[in-house]
Length: 109
Image (tube, rainbow, N blue to C red; front, top):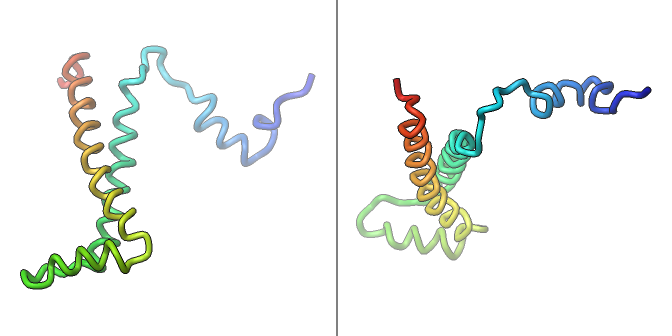
């Protein structure tokens, strides 16, 4: 009887024990995913915010021009700006759902 490759290979064994055969309680539901989504949204916010801050000018006379520069002249600037805005919205949706799950299950104590 042969074992799976994921249980024999040394690198795959680490991944298997960390992600696939992770000993978790049976009452974990889909509501618990919002904590992970919060982390992903926060990482996206930080990375895209840093890239946007590299090209943004806070001066009152050139702020609009710098946003137009990001949109038009920076490579994939429109994508970075949209990712930053949409991940902020997703962050707040996830945080409200994450807090709501905690209130619903009474895990705020």
